[in-house]
Image (cartoon, rainbow, N blue to C red; front, side, top):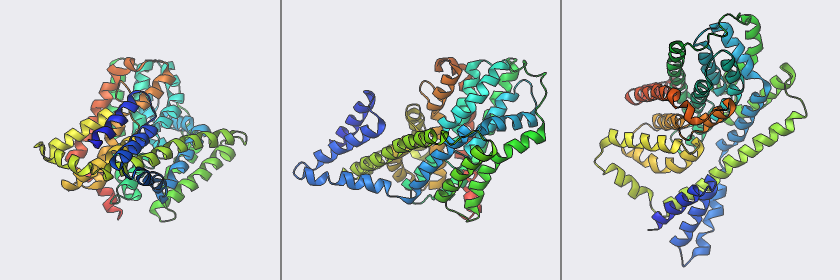
Length: 432
């Protein structure tokens, strides 16, 4: 009965517009109090204890640092230089700019790991360029929204860090390595409908006559941005620093590039950069802490085992349960961000994964890909909302274009389900 109260209060608070973290925290506190009416005040001492325990984890130090990295590179002008390099390599013409946008989003994903941040950075540069070249704004917003979703797969990824914290059997380096190949496949798959839709509808002809930027000049200017993923991932692989230390190194590297090399960041800009990053970090960490209280209430009320037994005993079978999980995650991915989804659902889903003996690293990549798909699935999708705001179009206007992107993403998901080695091979090869 108290379990229904827990989820009922949580859903009601969400429906009336309560922030996700507050909804989880309030629902958990009420459920804990009701579960121990005779010793209510003593039982409530578990709330601050679990609040602190949820934050007192070393890997979480990487989160505010990577958020700061994303903000620094967003302000430094790396995106525009990567765009020039991609155009210098691919040329101009119908279908080229959407492919350029996807490539740049993938490269930025190796720096910040934040989908909305990438949608803002790439969209701010590419939507104007694509509109000038003759691409409809709804199409441009669809491409940007879909390509930004790749960022939670390609390391460093905030969502993968959260998953590794919640699942002891999946380390941060292993999850980073596991997300690499699926993230690349995701990006390549999105290029196919983006290119052929452009060709089929005659988009992008307005700039076909313009010359390409000089390749070597573009490469020299973009090299500092290209070196960032190599520094972050290569340093971790070489054992020079941990993921947390890599985030700190990336912060100083980004400041050096923005303030010394490109000179797009000034001393007076540092306050706004630190303020914006601190606000976003505080939001994420508060959600993490309150989700820890929510997870404690689930375990205290012994809700996880009955839910697991009900699902595995439903008669759906292994693949039927997996399909049910995928449908659930797409639905919640439309309305919640990846961090919140992992914090709410991973404690419930991991016992199911253990029952069917699924590889936890592979399962984490599957969950992350479903969250990525949800981030650009109408009617509510955080990445698509950012791109549509920049393009000044409604989400409903993007439906005819974004459905093709969704089909491409689902095709990659199907391949990943059928061939789990795509996710597990690289971590095994690297010894994770």
